[in-house]
Image (cartoon, rainbow, N blue to C red; front, side, top):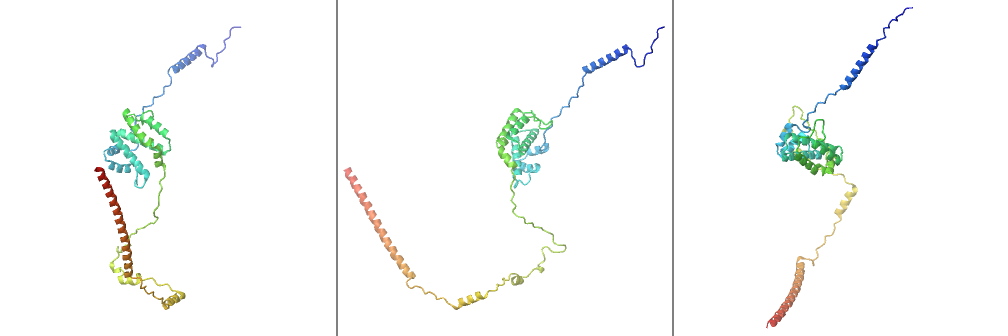
Length: 309
């Protein structure tokens, strides 16, 4: 029998084709290993100037004002209305006024003053949230030294070391030293006393009427005296009261006659007699005491004279 050749199946591949496939896979895996996926670098966030409380123009205007004008503008910008009766608003306006005065003394620039106001507002908000003193001190130190951002891109990195020490000293002498006082004054609810609930509604006079009304419609003085200002009617009295008054009128009480022994002349005579006796006794006592003192002085003078001789 002769050699017979089997037909090659369609799915069967030659060894050369299999080796080429494995080589391609290896080269692709090496290429993938050599070139890893590179994540895109995040774009740097620009440092945002912290205008959280006032704008640039408002701070410039406030720095150039006197303390009295500054307080008035602060009350309208914060806002803090009714500072004459609302204790919390009054305290808030005064705190920002002192802070701006401190910034004027240190000659801070407008961005530095705005950042200081924002930091101070952050500290007061922490007090209102009920944070402890150590949390305030730690958070403030991290923000001032630039190791923490208040918000993404909001970093306090434009203060010099000397300015940072001045700000830290200001905070330590104020809100840190009197922390309990700040917390009590800002969290304590103010008592309100309602003086009166009376409501007065003023309405316009009707159309076509006179306001005030004409004098021709006024009431005359005679009518006022006769009808309006008349005395109130007397209440009816009982029969017992009437009989009692009649009995009192019928019985006349005897009038006491003055005692002839008590008169102004008798009183004057008694006073003169008593006064004379008292003055005589007083005069004799004074005379006796003077005579005794005079004798004592004469005896002493005689003794001194004898000692000299």
